[in-house]
Image 1 (spheres, helix red, strand yellow):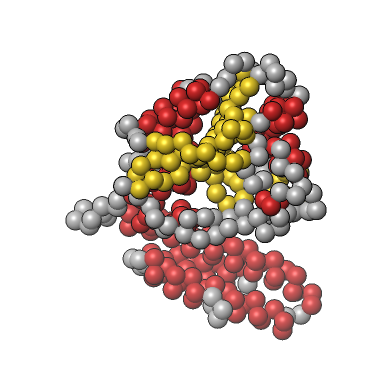
Image 2: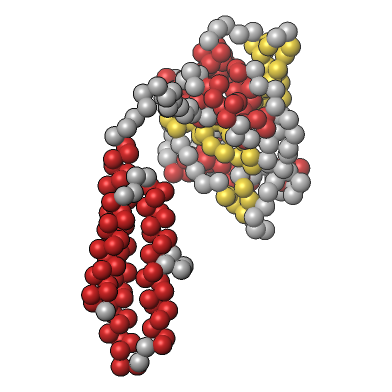
Length: 324
């Protein structure tokens, strides 16, 4: 048997010498190691061998199979290296495409840089909150309509996906003493979905607490921010509004393509909120504001459907390669 197997290996080596392509080698491999190959058939003959010989023959066949496999594999590697030396220089080159950041990421980065230049420090927090930090500490009582199941995603009876990043402000005021000046970028969740609303979207809220802060500080900060973001002097109006956590409260509209468009809400921090976080409202005052990242990105880049941010359309996203 040893002589027969040695002869079979020699025969295999000779056949491989005549191979010119990887396809030829594959055919040889099938001829020897395939389903009906020479070596495979030798294994099938074991069932007819005597019991005393089966162990020895099986061992020799496994060695044979391993040798044949290694010889073919090495020939294949050598052959591939030989083929790689021949390069057709007339073929077109392969273009390397460089990706780009998502427009939401670009907008968040731009807004945070502007606010950092005004002294705001970024702070992040958890997205699954309890009702106290998301509502009650912000002067939103249990009877307030925004606490209804139709507006809020509840995880458990008293656990919910935060509806604004104001909860991060509460945590920060409880953990840090005044004065403080922070911004809170992050994802928020509400039960809403249409071309201008999404169940998940991004917010940045700002908070400034110190002695002697008044509405003039709020107006000056936000007017400067809007002008810097759009890169020009914008026509802006402050419109009276209502938020449970600020008093007085306002919404800011900008004149955009001949129409007034709302871009953010703001106001002076309500004294109840300050008391809830153990800040004395007689010593400290402050302002807060909140804006939707998607809203500002849509205005700046002329996007009409909010859902385009989440559809992962490469033809859409690739337009922002030079937006940074």
